[in-house]
Image (cartoon, rainbow, N blue to C red; front, side):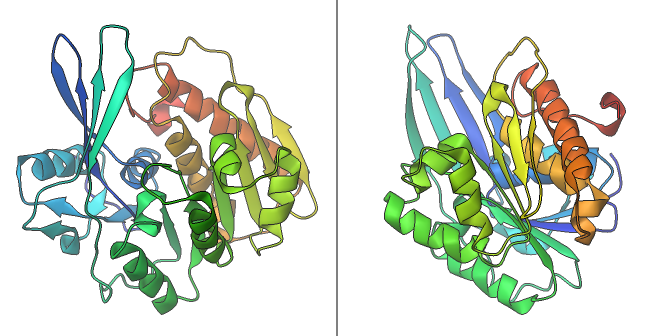
Length: 297
C-alpha cells in the first residue's frame, strides 16, 4: 500500500458505497465523486487528503481500504459511529434502473486541515445540509487556498434548479476553477449554448471553466482564451467516473494548482490530457481511474 504523500489538495465531499442489484446478483463498489477525485489524484502522484463521512462499519472500512490502497490520506475526522452512505441501483430484466439513496452528510466545521494550498469540493457535499454549511465554514477559514469546484449535480438530491443554482453560484463565486458537465449546465441554467453558460460562470469570478460533453469532448475557457478538445474514440464499457477523472486530471496539472495564467495552448494541452485520462476510465468497468504510468503525455 502506498504511503500517503504530503497533501497538495484537500478534497471535501462524499464517499459512499454504490450497490448494484440485478436479477443475477448484488455488487457493492466504493464510489462518490469527491472520493473518486481524491483517488485519481493519488494515482497520478499528487498528494490528496480527503475529508468525508464514513461509518465505522464494514462498508466504511471497505471504502477506506480502497482509497488508502492508492495513497489517499483520509482525515480521521471523517469517521463516525453511524452507517456509511449508500446509493442503490436496482436493474430490471431490460437493464432499466431505479435508484434509492441512503445518504447523510456532515463534517466537523473546525477540522484542522493545515495550510493545504488547494481545496476541491463539490457534488452532494456542497448541497446537502448540515454538511454543506460546514464546507462553507472550512472555505471561510482558508481564504488563501485555491478552490476548485465540480457540482456533479444529482437532480433528485440537490433540490429544485433555482435553489441548486443559488448554491452553485455561491461556491463558484469563490472558486478559481469550475468544472461541470453539459447535463449539469442544463439543470442549473435555462441556457442552451455552452458558450453562454461558460460566460455566465466566468462572470461569477472563476479563472477557468471547463464543460465536459461526454464522448463529444470538452470546452475549456478563461476570459481570454477558449478551446474545444475532442475525446479519443474508445470502446466504452461504462461511463462511471468519467467526469471525476476529468476533474482529477485538471487538478493533477501543477499550473492549475499554482494558479498561473493559462494561454490557449496551455488550455488545449490540459484538455487533451484530461479527455485522454477519462477515456481510460470509460474503457473499463466502474470508477477505476488511471494511474500515472497508464497515461502518455
